[in-house]
Image (cartoon, rainbow, N blue to C red; front, side, top):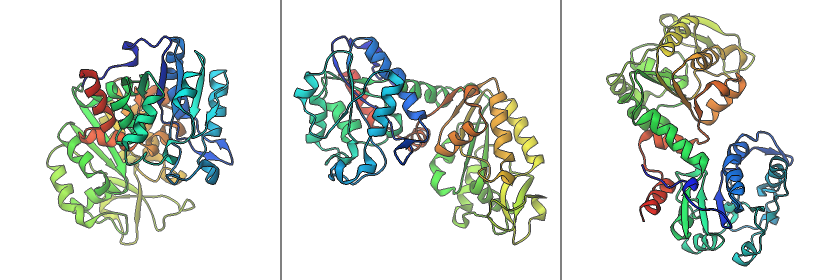
Length: 393
């Protein structure tokens, strides 16, 4: 995989258009979590240090395409512009939809501006050449840095890279690709993958791919219930997919999947429910499996402690409920204590990492959700593929 980095391009005096993923949670105009904004800072600051004029663009939420920002104010990036101004210690003006190449040319060196939400622009999702060429007209160099949207071939991620005078990867995107390549292409063995989630069907390709790469595969949540059912165990009224049992058996034939020996159950899905620990053989018809038990935790921690490479995506149980968070917490702390290479991705996984305050002890935390999973599946990410093409051309 050869992608030109922004570090390999002369940026002095250039207009640099950077596609970031600044899609952060906002409530009543206040940013609730600025992790994605902070992740983008090294790329922005590098361009400024090299003497570039920086034009930023991002999406926010799921606005109606073609509808003016004034008609859907909740889609405005204004709070992000204000937050960036504080973090960069300089004013970051928010540019309206009528921002032109002439406006870009008039920007002074060292300045930073933010374009309004790209997903409001007609032709963004369809990757229209007209919109892509408009973005390209604003810059001398296009920098793709939004790994979280790299799996989407849209005007601001893919089309602009075709038409910009130069196109390259930002520091965040380059680091993402490097970390994923290290974990998947030539991982140090033994390797473990931990995949949690509600449904096997939603992560089937990920499970099938990883089962052929790893030495051990730990499954959690509703996914684990399906594997337990596939192994012939009664899972009570737990969430599982009956039509995925054969697929689960096929995956179990490919690698070692240590199934839970004991679990935490309840009669209802509620944050007020009490956890009852049961061995798998004792699960009743009206039990719901909501976490793993202490014996299983011990088993999993032992496996984790001996691994050289760990890929983590998804919690082990309903960790949002205190009574059913022990499994996810124990696994998180075990990964943090491991001295090998660890990479984690996915919204719930990052939430768990923040909850247990172990971000400093994970080798790499991916900013991507869907893009992370598609890369793990082995799919080509369009926004990365076009950068590869431009690197050759």
